[in-house]
Image 1 (spheres, rainbow, N blue to C red):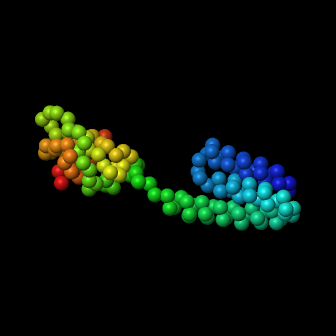
Image 2 (image 1 turned 30 degrees about the vertical axis):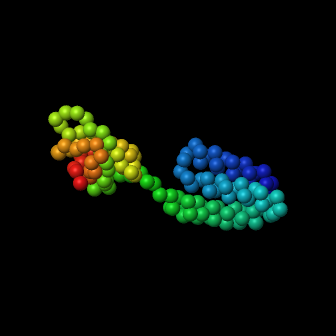
Image 3 (image 1 turned 60 degrees about the vertical axis):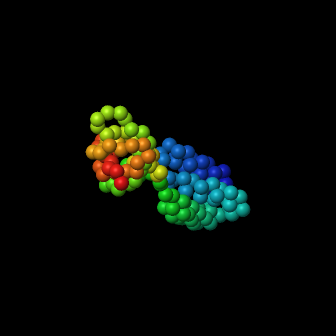
Length: 145
């Protein structure tokens, strides 16, 4: 098969990955592009297909196990509230009023943000260390540590 067909297939697969982001098709697109380059020297279709299969398996394995599985997210966005209970933060702002409330800042993002509004059962001051004891909708319930 002419090398241009492999290159076109590779570009189509990569564009398909952009349109339908699954992070799977891209590895086959990369393998097709590499097969297109190699097919300049290897003209047998059976051999080109074998090269494509091997390169697909290799690129998928390297991409999936080497890149995706080792990518660590520092955010806990999308996790249940049980995953953040016990996280510690520092009070960054206090709202005036009788009910203790304000903002607490975390060194690592909690549920997708590093700063959250909080409510507490006891008065807290700016700079106090606190720990999450509950998640109440869009606010955190904290207590002083």
